[in-house]
Length: 261
Image 1: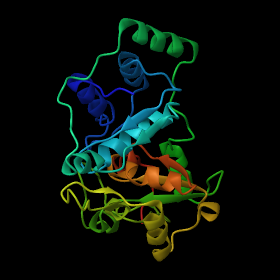
Image 2: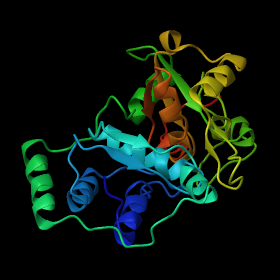
Image 3: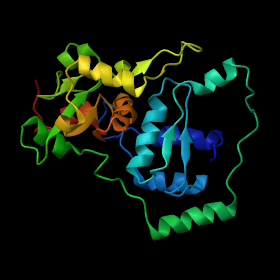
Image 4: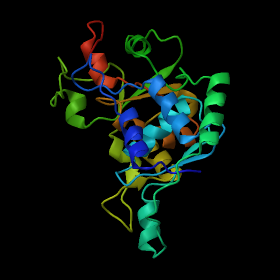
């Protein structure tokens, strides 16, 4: 298991927060070529165990977890919320040494693995605009539930973000703000952590959210594909079939064929 040195860490952030120039509102769209270059430089292969953590409220780790899983890295896991802060609060030591950069042999092995099995964005994890529009019209090929995790004012259309031409939400979508999936850390209150699966299950039940058997494919969305990543690890752990609408409302609202409620 490796932690990337600072330049690579910044590339991780850039990779999972690229602004799609076609949508000035700031849709975040993955670039598979950049992902391939990144995992090669890190010396990662799809079978490698990868442990992800952050100190920025779970959103970056959730987004990177999804990005890796969506590209076939099934060993990607998240270190619960602010466990790094908890580690320090307990008096355990933290290293300040620069992380080891993968050797040329490790990078070559990763390159060879990618040559034999090139990574690609899986449709199992990513919902394209056409699928979301079909679901909004009730014409989806399979049962699905659209989960909008934006704020309530965004959902109702009172708060129109970025360059969205109109406000509101996708017809039939369910609304649960992304913060509902997080809890404050008792040791580091400023850094939230993911709620336990039991807590998330109870929260979903209190809001009348359908069970994994009844929900079908749960498509998470927000304004630009970042907040929408937060529920994914928890829903996945509870047995839901999850996908991210990467362009989210920035992409949806920019298309003339989209409908609103």
